Amino acid sequence: MNRRRFVHWLSTLPLWNLLGKRAVAQSTFSAAELATLREVAGVVLPSALGKTRIDAVVSGFVGWLGAYRPGAEMSTGYGFPRVQSLPGNPSAHYAAQLRELAPKLAAGKREAVAAALEESKVDRIPQRPDGKHIASDLMSYFYAGSDGQDLLYGVAIKRDDCRGLPNSGDRPPAWS
Image (cartoon, rainbow, N blue to C red):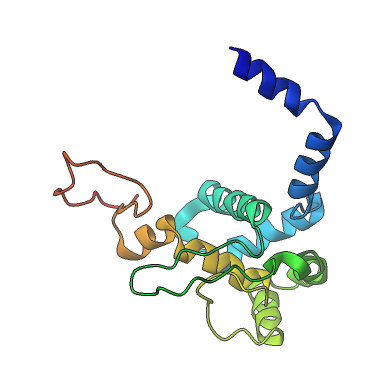
């Protein structure tokens, strides 16, 4: 009980609040930019997801940007013993890209996004968001994640979840 009180007291300190708000504010979008991002997501993400899931992907992407820490150590992975750090935050130009894209979406969403990707010289989906364009980075975020892989394979593999040992030998259920 004392630990909870201490943490609560600590969260009321002005410095603590300032640091927390600053970290979140680095990747927040205005309401108009967020609406444009949702429109872009409707174009670049599969329609099979439906509006609810597309909105969830956008929310996850915005949350991922908020938690992004340049210079943090990356997982070395199996067979790659060299330690690497995350590059700079890819979201530096996202707000400007969304503001530039917003008026063009009225004429034709697919055409506007395709032209923006071509102008940014994006020719493939990057392995991880790289900052070239928000549309390609949103696709990268989705397809590199568990939900994107489930959609591609058509089954609920849930790569990032633990199914446990009792049913580990069972085939994953169909994606829905």
